[in-house]
Amino acid sequence: MRRIIFIILSVLLVSSSFSQLNVVCTTDILADAVKNIGGEAVNVSVLMGSGIDPHSYRASIGDVRAIFGADLIVYSGLHLEGKMTDLFAKFEKLHIQSIGVGDLLDESELIVLSDKGDLHDPHIWFSIAIWKRCSAFIAEKMIEMDEVNADDYRVNLDQFIVELDKLDWETKKKISEIPESARVMITAHDAFNYLGRDYGIEVKGLQGVSTASEIAATDLIVLADFIVENQIPAVFLENSVPMRNIEALIEAVRAKGYELKLGGELFADSMGTPGTKEGTYIGMFEHNIATIYNGLKE
Ligand code: ZN
Image (cartoon, rainbow, N blue to C red; front, side):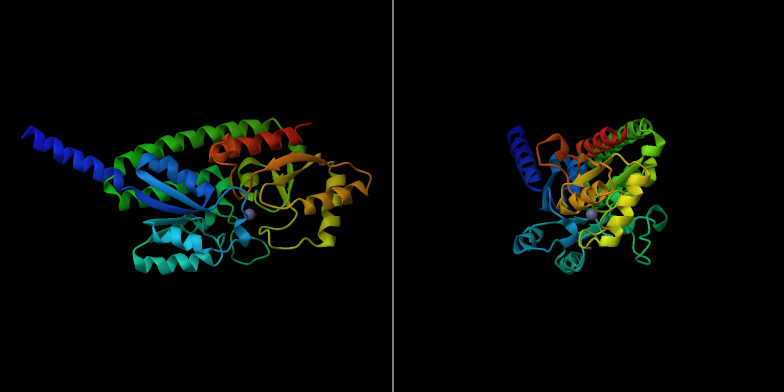
């Protein structure tokens, strides 16, 4: 009898280790949340890894193959993934569920893009308050789909929220140490509006919210004037945007007799290399805040 129970238990253990929830995420930032919530119980893959620009991304055959093996697709939404979202809807018919976290948020939480009517800024991961809500949406979905591991997902979510609260507190403290007049961030594209809103930093992107838009010469001159007038010390690079526009800005400012320094590289639409500190959401966020602090504090 004892032997039979042992065999049954072994079979259950082996089969449960094979019943991992397969989750495909569009960005590595989403994958980080899924891994934090899912732990060992999920198998996570990412379509757009470190350094990839989501605004101009097109799904590959490999992506479609990855989606075929998935139980759940997690995407950012708010048009970040463009037409890929239509593809995800088609997979629903094959019982591959999908969740677009940004699309579940209340409009009052979102930043409206001034020149685009009713469109909202998709860079929601730079609001820790919003990211906590998005993580809860993901956890809810995973709990609904995988009752066996539901309790673990709840515990892991709580733990992740505690870490995000700590990150929020540390960010507030660090930003408060930058003189108020220097709290102006000039970056390659407008990815940091939520960070600016939540922590009181004025944000000016060179290229607009999507990386696809070209920078106009007149915008460059206006921004150069603003920098010289306000004695902005630094401009920041981004990991998924080419450097040429930032170089053009530094040149335009130099032509006015002012030296704008390069404040280092920020992670914008993707995290750092997997396995490094910046290859996690919290590590990437801390890196960005330290870089902003060092660039603007004097
Ligand atoms: Zn972006």
